[in-house]
Length: 412
Figure (tube, rainbow, N blue to C red):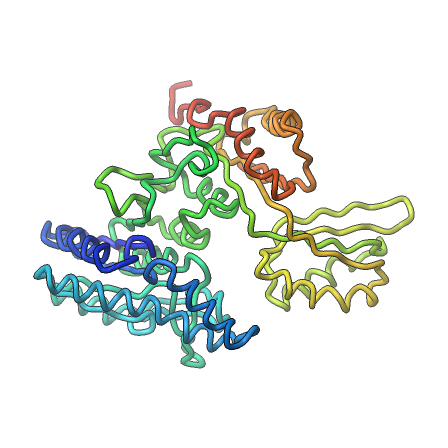
């Protein structure tokens, strides 16, 4: 008998008909002799609707109350799915994140899972029930406050539960049938990948590929949980995310992200400790910084640019503003009209010339690069937001990711 964790996203449980469809699928898995833990997101766009309601009554709602509000969406989904499973003749038990023993830190809106105490989940499985857990949420054990894990947090819930309960597989069901070489809505020739490594998936997720939350991939990599991304509307194989793949692609895929903003502090004195003061202040304000570029001028001053999630742009501005005078800088500006495009592939680190081809492909498409960041398996470029889709298409056409591969484990 296997233990499977199945996570169903918002589109998979968007209405009663789809919830019944999910219930039939889960029931089949249970009847096949498997133990099943199901993690659900809120129905359809209900989280967005709740956020809209909150801002209609308060433009700056308290983070604690937002978590109290937003966790309601997943609680509705879990209860309805349990009811649908009972209709299918399958015994089910629905649990909130706190009831399932998901403990987090105290960061409302962006909490991280610190521990899972799974007594009630194990008891439910031993009683022969499908255990349904509300995704995206947990509880801070110190304050007893409900917390949420941030956008895509149900993915992290599912992989963490799979790790804690030693599941054989964590299946992520969504409205697409796997992970593609690029967003199919942008690149018509994008193709589904059969497999991708944890490291590559982590870079793709950080680059904006929205199929998996980056933190869920981190958990899967740390604890060796195989992740199978597949469609809830088809029976086809999806994409496996795992430690090692049969082929090490030079280029695995192209990701893009339009949810970042660029902050530039102009005319900062070029002396030791300035960067430390700036980024310590941002860290204290819980601002996530992505790319950083520093340009030193001949006059002894420097411009420092960095990117942050747009949701952190206001906090970054509030943290940066008082530093301008303190550091003796000339001023700062926030640019929300940028986007990031990233090329990812594990074979990139041993293949010379990839960067040159990236820059030439973007130049030929008449796309200017504003910032560049690299890792051994990724090249990311910041461009104007209106240029990001042409940039994705240009890079995908240049590298045609599925074709350029190297065999792993071949005889020398």
